[in-house]
Length: 393
Image (tube, rainbow, N blue to C red; front, side, top):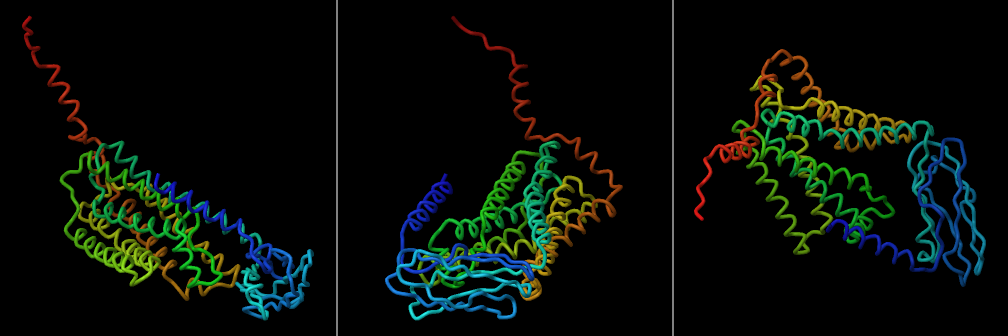
């Protein structure tokens, strides 16, 4: 409910902001994609009638990536027409186009983010990959939930993995909701990255909140189903204590205006990255000690492997299509984390299909019935078997 109210407030603020009219020039689109050796165009127009002519000169971040025709023009005072500018793609990559003039306040909204691509087919393929791995990652939580429900047991599922997951996805949701719903966070991000795109999209918010919800369901199952004496380890509690100190201290500094709340969100994201690196280790060790993967859903791993592989393929595809290899090798965090997760998925598949394939414990575990699930049944049976009390009239 709170999230809905925040979203409603956010869109109301945007609507009010859009209703305000300001002087100067603007463009019909701030983001344009053009293919190599092809043309696209954008339009420059006045938000309202100008009282004086405005001379505009367009500047390109990289001169060899595209050409502009014209690169400079004068927008006359009181004009109602538009100025069309043609873009020709010369080399794949990302190019920022800005405008300069003596009256900067009149042209501050004249800017573009131009993407020069090699192939339109690769663009569509990248979009398909993105949707497939989004669905795969979203569905990947449910095989474990289903196997827990079917067995009425969570034996074989490591509780450290579950508790690290809920903390990680909670922090991830805080980061996404903060940058997507709160204007103060967005304004601070824009001030640090002028004319940059907000890195959080609606699908990021939906995925993180859904992941948190699915993990909460798993935690409830851990509380009500047979767990064979499993509990969260002291090692996990120690790690969570360290993460908690980082979050609380950074939140206190943000509340005291020592750092901005955007920095607090960044610290939350760093903790999430650390959790992503270590969260698979407890489950892998548990499988090794039990010499079995019984209770640990391989469906979860197969879907996670699919999502992680397609995510990395999308990055490689975009690197080729936009000549943007620096986003992979210049800042390898995202690619490295994806590769790390996929390698762990491969290890889990080896445990399930190779190392412990012939272990017979799976059949015994699946036939085990939860003591907690039978308690209501036992209570009812005892009451039914009791002799009825004599009533005195």
